[in-house]
Image (tube, rainbow, N blue to C red; front, side):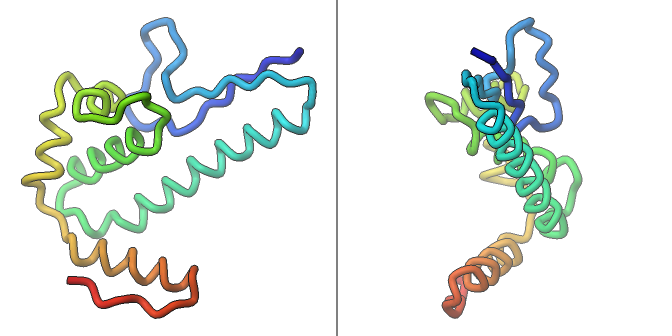
Length: 135
């Protein structure tokens, strides 16, 4: 069998310095080169789509650090963590404690209405239904 490690959903700060593969790697065992290539392409596509999403939402954040933390938090949410809580999200993001993510969710300055508006517009364009009025 051919083993292929597919790197997916890695964000800033994921260095893999522990000697173990990061928890966001997917291990694919297959004799099919096409299946391994498809898994690799799927992972690359997911990274590109998440990057595009964060790029579109950049204008909603007043500070770069807040935007970067939001990206790290999004990485944790879409990862295959067995348990998604403040501590596991913080560990996945490379933070010492969940304080940064909690600050992002509770006190950070960002334009929630602009983000919601963008979300509703994007969702309606994909479903063909008119977007509901946010708020």
